[in-house]
Image (cartoon, rainbow, N blue to C red; front, side, top):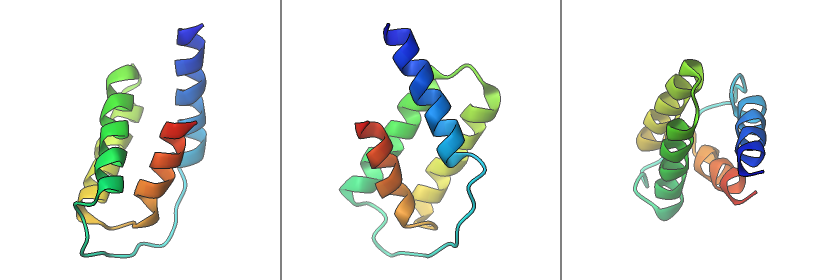
Length: 83
């Protein structure tokens, strides 16, 4: 049952975040709690998946969160992690 839940979460993440393109915004507040939670979610997700393209996407998203390039990203990841 847990395996099915993880697979469903991976599939949802891939559909929602991979291939979505939005405008970028920069921010000065890069070390806030939401960003830290988003990066933890991505690291955990990366460790669960076996797909190399998902691992690369997670690495790229972590870089974007660190840079503050896309400010809504941490909030969206936080929402996904709570579902």
